[in-house]
Length: 194
Image (tube, rainbow, N blue to C red; front, side):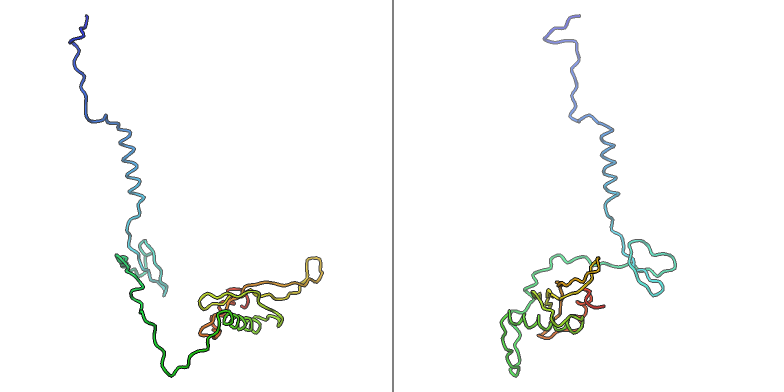
């Protein structure tokens, strides 16, 4: 049977506008979506649990025999706004009867505070009188020194060795006076005192 080029007995091929459906690809996509939804963090209540005078917080229900209270968390503010706008623009005035403090240059003020700090460590941490500080810095109310102190120890062969340690130490200075409580806290953190 011969076909002619002008027409023919072949039926016209149907074209579809929809892409062919691939069930495997569709199934994979649905599995990925289900996994993503399952792994997404959900909003859970924070529970405040109380038992035997102890309080703890958890995101699961409290155990049996404990008092449980759901915590209501406030949402964050939409816009915190500028912080500087709330601050006063003019400095507070001093009473007329207060004498003006003597102005110290920044380096001499730091040197004076560093000397107070070194004296405190010599008195309270058992530093020898010939201990000195190599450098001093100040961040707000905390003066930090690098203290050089002579040490004498016995090495692994039993020989006596002389040397110098360089150890940081911090003091709290408030209003030109050493704050003993906070300085003790700094000294404990630096293992100077127990």
